[in-house]
Image (cartoon, rainbow, N blue to C red; front, side):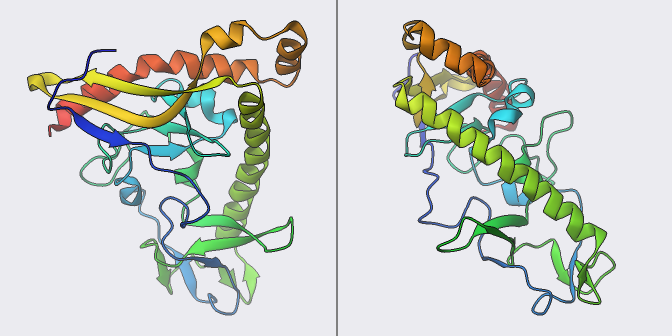
Length: 257
């Protein structure tokens, strides 16, 4: 990667911890057929809520789709999670255009697709309950796409539950994958420094990648365990995604400062 210039734009990958609401969610609450009896989903196909970020969480099962468009890295906070890098500035997603639409033909991460719904952990329990972001602009009082009819879930809500359930299952598998990477010491902190047009440059810090040399040094038993668990494929897809830094540079050049 190119050397950093003195006037480089600097950004750090934000921490993904439980101390603050999850990314995009401002007022996540448990969905209630009583409190939210007249709530409706009036989605317009835009993703304006995803504009002010430079990274979006991914599940390992998504790597095969994300590898075509984004650099895939791991957070430095523990437990680590994989994220897609979507911008060269701290609060600018290059894959959301000025009208709030996700760029056509580019993979849309499941984290974005499930919004404004989310599974919330119940204190002292391993079970989850369906939640919503009450601050989401796509949720309206009244309307055709109600979440409840006569106190029962509508097909709109049933589809949301199915998507969140699928996502939650993928989270468990991803956590096991990431824990194995950490336990084997395969993740190393990295910086990305890139040259842009007009003499501008960019440096992103606060993320980790799998070290190829450390991966090569895995003993046979551990390597076979990784292969049996299906963890080698996402590792190689992650390593291949480094080529996508060039996509971010091209998009940043088209969008301007």
